[in-house]
Amino acid sequence: MNKVAIITGASRGIGAATARKLSADGWKVALVYNNSEAQVSLLASQLGNGSMAYRCDVKDVQKVNETVAAILADFGRIDLLVNNAGIAQQKLFTDITDGDWDDMILTNLSGAFYFSRAVLGDMIKRKSGKIINIASMWGETGGSCEVHYSAAKAGMIGMTKALAKEVALSGITVNAVSPGVIRTDMLSSFSESELEALRHEIPLDRLGTPDDVASAVAFLASEGADYITGQVLSVNGGLVI
Ligand code: NDP
Image (tube, rainbow, N blue to C red; front, side, top):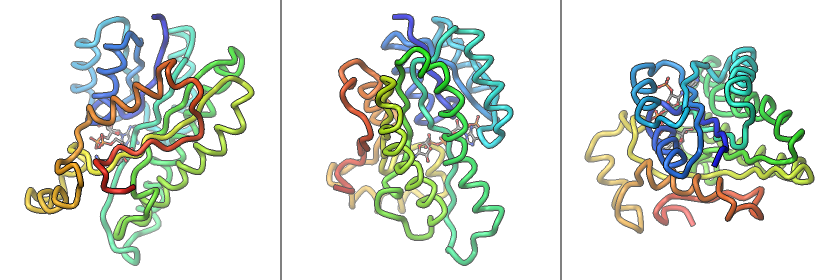
């Protein structure tokens, strides 16, 4: 297979697991990261098969456009975009500052908009491509003390459904994967006892792993999912049904 995937936030957690899974499935992967240079360099060397790392802050629209142009120059095509880069923050709604709000929306929603717009030119020209957005169960249900995060992820789900309709005739699918509680650095603000309490609420009785999410992404990226678009695939152990 000669297909090329871009994964944002590929240096750690769900993005890194997705890069490993897609690479094992034969994809060439452009690994987009922001700060974690050592981790992403190690990952790129482990993956081999032409995978390369690109530093890009997804909040910076000019850098996003330059990065997509560089990936196109290096690989010649883009078949899949996984909008995974994200941040989380727990705060009372009334404590959220303008800066917190802007950072959350820019990183978790605008970044996906910038990357999707930048790759669509090539995909529409070739009448082929897939976009997969990593949303969150909080985008489906709303999470107390995570209103800005929930709003960004709900926006991502709306963008998924609307864009899926708009680009379907161009042969492009757009879907979202909506993780529940997944053990990554993003949960570092929770204590082990808080995580244990969360586990008790999950019908499948365990926290999710980055590989659980990566498997869902790999399915939606595969030819087996060619007739699926505009959907939200929840990976949450039954926590939200
Ligand atoms: P991690 O905190 O482990 O990793 C976050 C990734 O996003 C890193 O690779 C980081 O890059 C990248 N990133 C953050 N900000 C930027 C930015 N401005 N520009 C470019 N890259 C950036 O998080 P997870 O793996 O847990 O989360 C991945 C996605 O899954 C996120 O969108 C998150 O909201 C979503 N999710 C996670 C859940 C969980 O329980 N873990 C649950 C539901 C959804 P670097 O380190 O290089 O700066």
